[in-house]
Image 1 (tube, rainbow, N blue to C red):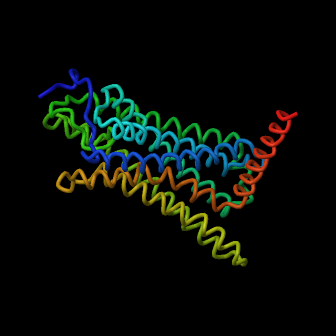
Image 2: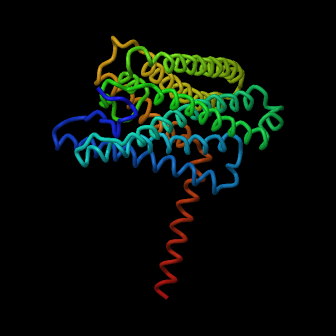
Image 3: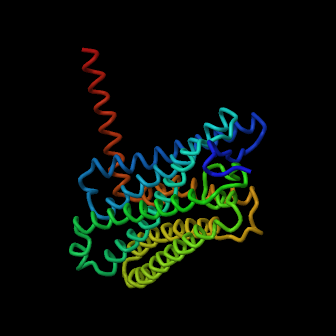
Length: 319
């Protein structure tokens, strides 16, 4: 039995005890991580460099890519390092930082998805008021509110979680420091305060989900009135993947944080955590951007400019 004040480290979940399977896990996570870095990095570069993409939609998309990079960089590299070096340890301060960043980035991302739904609602259902409602100042204020809400939410959860006495050892049954798993280490009923905060947060997230669904009901109603079949197809192809990712994100996070203890098992918890912490940051660039013709054209320009500049440099060096 140990008190939280005397803990120096936590032990994370080991995917396997076999070295070959550890290398396989490392390789799989490395591939996923590199794909997420490439996809989100390209979006950030393209949106920042192409002045034609300096619009509210792409401004929020750039913020989403930054959040996705932070999200997957908080959890996956440490899991890869542990598999490669055959260890499970993470320092106490490292665990605190991981909890804070996970809650901060996930909370900010979900708030941003809500803002993006509002942006699409205004663009399709209130096009005459779009420039007034989604001006540059309004967009900056919305983005600032997204980051601030994530920061305050993370500060509250992290302070509550690590102020609770931990006397059930230091083994966390997850591949990163996750609040529900840390609460299992708490003494008696001292976790109820953090559980109450989690319920309030889940209710707010559900409210955002209802707002997104209602927004898209009105969007689809407006889209169905569009006479052009091509226009309807384009609108649906952009909206449905968004709703799918939001639904996956919300359902897995709420299940991970609010499921009853009787349903908890290391294998199920691991699958759920991978679904909400690894899959969305990797797929978001494809879902939100790579089907977008404007981004594809901007990507071609960046690639052609890169090769053209490299060719000029090579010619200059040869001379």
